[in-house]
Amino acid sequence: MSILAFEKFYVRWLEEMKHRFEKLRAALLQASLSEEEVVAVLVQACHSHYCEYMSEKIKLCKEDASFVVAGMWRTPLEAGFLWMGGWRPTTAVVLAYSLMGMQIESELQKLLEGIELPTMAALSARQLSMLDSLQQKLRVSEDDLSNRLAILQMLLADQQMAKATAANPPPSESNDFQDVREAMEPKLAGLRDLLAEAEQLRGETIQEMLQILRPIQAGQYALAAYEMTMAVRKLGNQREGKSHLAAVSSGAPTNIRELASQGDVDLLAKALETGVDPSEPDYDGRTPLHLAACEGHTECVSLLINKGADVNRKDNFGVTPLFEALRAGQDATAQILVESGAKTHLEDAGIELCRAAATGDIPYLSRLVKYGVDPNASDYGDRTPLHVAAAEGNTEAAAVLVREGADVLAKDRHGFTPLDEARVADDQATIRMMKRTFEVVSFRSETDHV
Image (tube, rainbow, N blue to C red; front, side, top):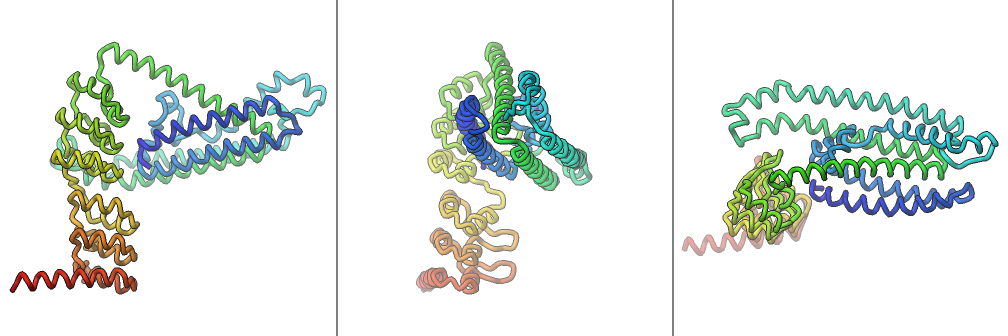
């Protein structure tokens, strides 16, 4: 999942979560010990919806771990209190104790009279013991993850990174980040693993809390957690709103990357009139044109190009706006870019084509070759995408490649051809198609010779 897709998902997810908790709040107002089952169903619905958010966040970790650990889809206030890209698991236990203390104050007389209550004020000795055990376990797990993160952060300055940043010319004066990327990749992989473990720990914490608490207690607990989260978010939004108003009143230019990604062409045009650079990059080197192309905002793409945006500007990962459009399936923006002189300039084109061929992603494969990626580009083993399609039995992918000029007799480093791969896979349809192609090419060659 891309960052922009996740941000849109999060907005929709929050709105749906609001509706679910409105139902839970209404049920809790009517709840009694005899109605625990109704509340239990609503709590489970809220939990399932939260699990959907956790799942999408884990997917995003694989795409951009640094974005997740910084909590950049949240307000700065919220992000300031994050641990490993989310809430610290031990806060779940602290909230339970806080609710218990608060409710004991309001319901002390009923407790003294021995009235059975379904609230957090009536946590049993067994429940308290389980909460204590959970808290101790979480502290150990949190300390382990935090220590491993600290080690990973220190390794940012290891010998491999020092060597990569001591290149001539230095990274500050060059657009070649290949050595830096290679030095950073194991660190980012470690960060992804830590974030996945932290998210798993949060998920396990919620499960254990729901097992410890009775249904109505769980409902009150879940509602309190939701309200606390929303309160911090709203306070963060108010603080950001003031900052934004201050920026506008001082004449500061609007973030044109955000406007481009949202497709707000009118505000983008006004922002560009202030003289801001139409190719102003973000921390990853992505320009407004990268973001508009990825989202398919054709008017913004045309506007940026007319204002002088560099159509072939690469981000820090070597990706051009055209490749962003192709990867996202935005044919209309891709066409505008090509007509304006854009090229894919795709690094590791063979690897990208082979990946598409292996997964059978025909639309993506077709777009790549249509917009100039060589169908005979090879991977590190000199395998072309046609080798891969034949080996995987993806006849449709093979047909697309052959139609676009892929060589059925291209040899990999072991001397195998795509036709050989098809024979090994016993893919008769691909074999027949390749043989027909070979015969046609041979006939044309002989005719030309004569």
